[in-house]
Image 1 (spheres, rainbow, N blue to C red):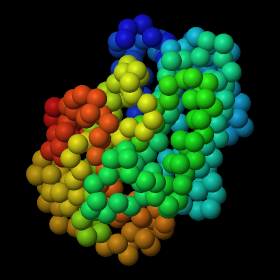
Image 2 (cartoon, rainbow, N blue to C red; image 1 turned 180 degrees about the horizontal axis):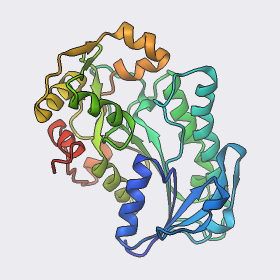
Image 3 (cartoon, rainbow, N blue to C red; image 1 turned 60 degrees about the horizontal axis):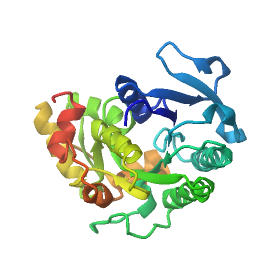
Length: 307
């Protein structure tokens, strides 16, 4: 769909930056929801800054009148810091309060958007072990699963107002520009990489290119609503990912970090490193989405800039 007016939160993060670049390249108008007043209004890159403060539940709703779509990606990084009580609150509030603020504002518009793509994560399912799960699986009960449930529920005012709401439950985006990839890839390049824990845990990987393409697919395809897993179609174990990184980089991966050491360093957050998410993108596959990078080999090659 050409010539759309699309608002994006979290536009400076790994996924948001790539999404904005993709939209601008294809001639769409992009509004960035920003917290700094100096970044509101027309920007040098061709985007327009719209003010908001999700933690204070403030937003310039008038500037969103007539937008065609909203992609809501904002939220404190799960892996950015150790999970103290204060940071757990920040992880939760940055998602839930921001979504409540945005959804309520969109619901009040005279000309609301056709679609709100409101982010979630595969953490919704909790730890799934070896069990393959798709969008029909129940929610987990750990901290991140609870946050994801509240996060998705916070978008309810938009859905009640007749806006199509989609919740992309994103897995691990492997890319050197941020997230886990920014930590893992340099270690493997220095031959300091290795498996984490016993390496048998499943990671729901997706390349940055497929993540962006999937988000755009959700905007464009009106039949898509509700939860949609954004992961590659072939979940891989940490051991398999370690072997693939070692092979493509031509570096040994002899190191292994035991689970007790991860828990000592990371605290409760270690459960996301050694935990298992064998999640598959059932809704995307059923809708005919074509992955560019369907397996670990292709995802690693994309992260290393080899394709």
